[in-house]
Amino acid sequence: MNWERLLSAKRFGMEHYENAKKHERTEYQRDYDRLIFSSPFRRLQNKTQVFPLPGSIFVHNRLTHSLEVASVGRSLGENIGRELRKRYLSSEAHFEEIGSIVAAACLAHDMGNPPFGHSGEKAISTFFSEGKGACLQSEVEQEGGRWSDFTCFEGNANAIRLLMHQFRGRRKGGFAMTYSTLASIVKYPYSSELSGGKNKFGFFASEEEDYRQIAGEIGIIQQSDHPLRFVRYPLVYLVEAADDVCYQVMDIEDAHKLRLLSTEKAIELLLDFFEGESRQRRIATLSYVRDVNEQIAYLRSGVIGLLVNECSELFLANEGQILTGEFNGTLIGNISPVVVKAYRQCADFAMQHIYRSKDVLDIELAGHRIIGYLLEMFTDAIRNPGHAYSKLLLDRIPEQYETDSRSLYGKIQSVIDYISGMTDVYALDLYRKITGMGLPVV
Image (cartoon, rainbow, N blue to C red; front, side, top):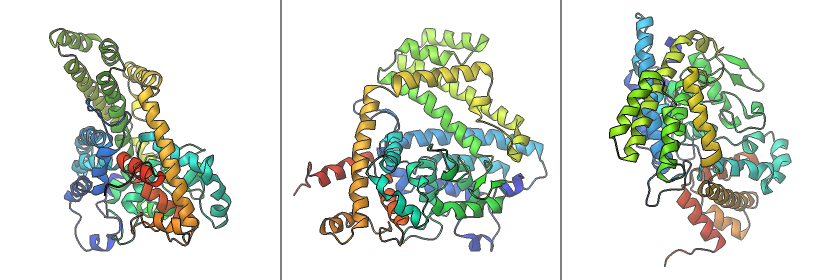
């Protein structure tokens, strides 16, 4: 792969316009602005990240998480862009815009996630793998649909669909993003047939040919055709690293604010990223900073800066392998031993003491119940559109979703499109109304 092709300002769905004019570098910045002002991005403010949406203590939701990931992603991209320009002084590649590309992709990386955090993804998958939706498998497969798209539902693949699909009444190309930004979002560039039963793949069958078009245009190496698989687009590593940095470190800070871990333990976890003089300097600073929240914020800031530098250096050191598709693992997983050990300590602690906390488990339970029930009601409605109750339910679904698709696969997708776009509050409110537990105020 080469940077001149990889960094493309061509817009998906607007290729005929792009051919008629010179590609301007500001196109990448327009991607960022287009996302910031979009309704799906704005709805992230009411979608759970890990902890329940805030009461008196404000913790991260999907919106604040995405903004922070974009900030870290921009720093990573700018670090890489500066060094690549030094390496390739005469190249026409838009190295100076890598920061804008990565920041835009970071903004969009969670836009396809359903309500109630990762439990929402699990709820959709299990509805079709072991819930009441499992009975639809034979019918979907008989008509040629890909069942694993549902049983391994992946928010990342759903983000690509949201950005690329031409929903009814909308323009061709969806958000009409640049090829480079779209490619940067696809964390797992292969079909759900290769997911091994895990929720890790890059695109649904409905967007497979669109991704093939993008990959062919910008020169992403294809590894297999049936099932379709590509190597990772290089900037995916930076988007993934920005996400890894933010969610792991910020979850520690949120857990401290919610008193799920002590100040002493939070300081211990964050200090372990540093050694020698750097560690001693931070201990000295903590001795005169008395506000405990400020202590954690100070350490968190230092950890993020350290991880950004480590990931940037690793990417540049392995540029050749990344461009040939031979680099294995993640940037975070390959950084220096001391730092990666501290990162894994945070991950292990979070898994044992944060993600299994009562409040987080309650969100998972609620998400499974609410999303499972909504899927049950709406999938039954699309299969029996002539029934009186089905008509009432289908009237709730906005016209942009194609509930009258010719295939059952397409009809199920329309239901998932609708439900995955809901906020936590909207999904709960709709659940209450359908079950009769809540009635509209007259």
